[in-house]
Length: 201
Image (tube, rainbow, N blue to C red):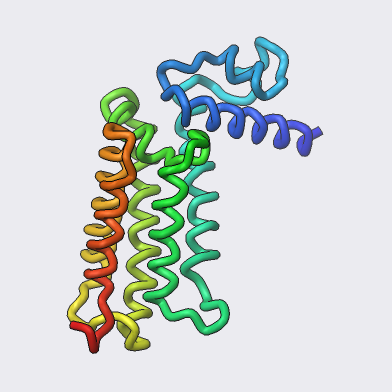
């Protein structure tokens, strides 16, 4: 019974994520989410106390999955890849995924940040805590690159990670506005220059 409850709750979260990634949080109704999840109408409050609680849990679910993806890319090197190479793989994946036509694959942080920052304190905090966790994981990989010699020693891991992450969030927003990948390509160019090899500096 508990397993069935957990599966239904996850289905509601995943269905809502796809819809919200396309339309935004405020534009998606509870009945639409339940229909997409194939859950009977009126069942929402069996799983979530409010739409705001649902939004917070959706963000937390997204953050947990994103951190797992980050770990797969930035974690222990595969085939001897350096930390610098792993970081560039991550940013390359960001470029391709955020320029794709599949809206549900795009970053939920980019989609929701401006919308919910003044709408819900709980959701704002969940997004803020999530992005801080992303930045800290990127910073750990930068620190590893400095230690192993694949990144320049003048880099400050946390400040560099924050700067790059903020740059990519901005580029993602500009790409959406322009419907052009040029801002993302520019972000990749700057990222490559920041993550320059010591001998190239």
